[in-house]
Image (cartoon, rainbow, N blue to C red):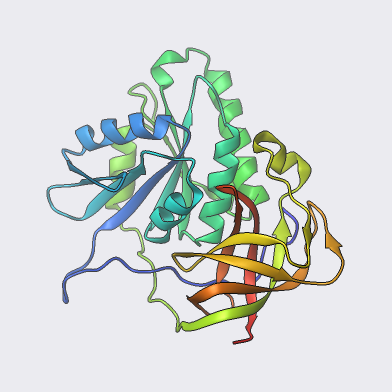
Length: 283
C-alpha cells in the first residue's frame, strides 16, 4: 500500500484489576474458518466460552490467555474494535480455499489498529494433502503482510495440523513464551474537525466488494477512530481517486477522542474504502 501512514496511536488496554496482569488477547480474524479455529483452540486450551454482542471469547482456566472471534466478520467496525484490544492477531485462512479478499481487509484493519504482532493461522489443514499448496498459501500470506508493513517474513505461522511442527503444541509453547502486551495509551482529546493524510483503496484492492471510491469536497463517509464511529463530511479541493494519497480535512457530526497520529478508517456502506492518520486537530 502506498505510504500507508506515518505515526500511530497505541490502542486501548482492557480493563483489569489493579495489581493483576491482564490476560493476553489473541484475536482470530480472516475468513469464516476463524470460527472453526476458535472452537478448536477453545477445546485444545480447555478455555471457557462466553459471547456478548456477537463477540466470542474463550478464556483459559488460569485467565492468562483469551481467544476472541467475531461472528459477523464482515463488519469492519466490530473487527476493528476487537483488534483494538488485541496483543496478537492471527489472520485465519481456510487451507482448502487459500487467502480470500477479506484476508486483505483484516490485514488492513490490523495495521490501522496497530496490533503489536500479526501472524497467520491455517485451518482445515486435514482436508489438504498437498504440502506444496500449503507452502504457496503461506508465501502468499507473508507477502500480503509485508505489503502492509507487518513484517510478513517474521510473522509467526501456525496451523491446526497434528502432523506438522507448527501445530497446536507449537502454538501453546509460543504463547507461553512471554508475549508483550500493549503499552499504555497516549493522551487523547475530544475533537470534531481534523486534517489528515489518507490512502484511498485502489481499484484492485476495492474491486472485490465494489468499495473503491472517489472523494470530493462535501463527500460523506463514516470514520472509525479510537474505537468510535462517527459520520463525517470531507473538506477538500479538487478530486481524489482510488489509489491516491491525499491530504484533506474532515468534520465529524459529533466529537470523538483522537490525538495527532491517531489512525482511522474511512467506511462507506459498511465497507472500508480508505485509511488515514490524524495530522492536526483543528477543533
